[in-house]
Length: 479
Image (cartoon, rainbow, N blue to C red; front, side, top):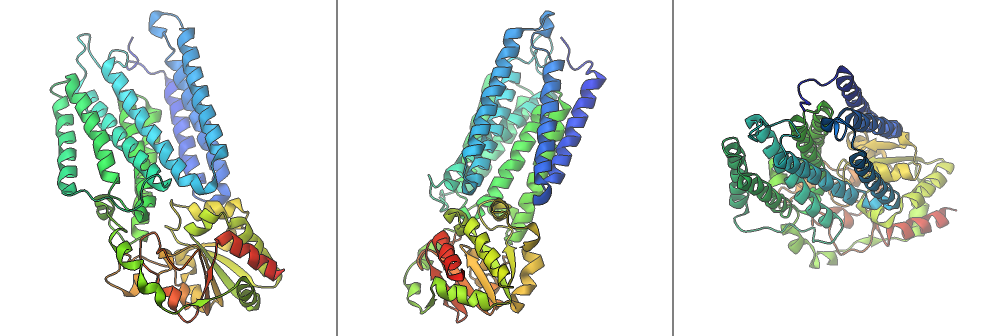
């Protein structure tokens, strides 16, 4: 049966509406205030797309009847996947959000590989081959690319998940000759995909897929933890392009639209984050950030004198302040301190102190990580500011309250040309009259493995404790 010959007008229209819903979803997700609406649009779009596909390509239609067993199988599969998604999303702690995102991307990549394999093994069902079983050369390119990008997304996301989840060291693992190996493997994948148009032998398809799984591991293993937010959004982008490539093979406009949306938005996000870290996209992909400095920064430097304060000192200083700017980082996420932090801010506001939150674009482990946590603690959106909107205010602020953020506040990024984070835009916390810095201990440098100059400045007071415990003690002292 020829699906391609005539896609009914209503199907094209339904897919177009689903595509419009996906665009509205992206639009809604651009701000925390409208994000729930954005999610609803996305769910509605997906519902329309799935329902349309099931009604149009009725299982067993080519046999002249609807195959109920097949339909039941499909609905059971949807139910299983939906249940797993629902249970996982409900149980997941907000701090584990980046791992969840990486894990879900890996599934999208795997789905693309499975669809490509299904299309390859049974091309007539997909209407991409003649009666002799020879697949159209164009479809072979789409299929090869879909399988390759999907496989890279899958294995890369698995490594990203393991690194974010702490099952694997966040330090870059650098293989000797890695650039030669990576470029050679990529060249082989592209060459074989081109060769696939001439020879559709099974060995070509499976070799492309196998090499792509391999290159996913090779590309992501050398990337250090500090670059993980960029990697997560990059894998997000790849999963979109894999879906788009499969959309062409399946002649499904909804998949093409959605894949292109996800692919381009992920790519733009990666670019924005690279700019926020002052690193080129190529240098992130080439990998290896945050390894070398760890060895040098961990040891005897801690012997320098620094001021240590107590919760009472911190409460006293903030009570006297006119303005306090809170700078949250990954440490706040690990300690789950956001609720205690909002309580502290509420008490300060009762004392007439102006409270603002400063968010660095790469604070945490994924884009928007801090915004999500603050929203979860019901911090009003109008108190949360991005780096470029608030940086000029530190100089006029009495207290900068840094809670578990390290690299994004390190003044070395502005002055020390030898520093691996040199040139990365940072929050100018050192310009505040007093900096209160919550950190577990003086040992242990930040995620990029660079020691922070700020700890030893005269106007810095270190509050050494678990972030949540410290904030709770400050709340008691304020009361």
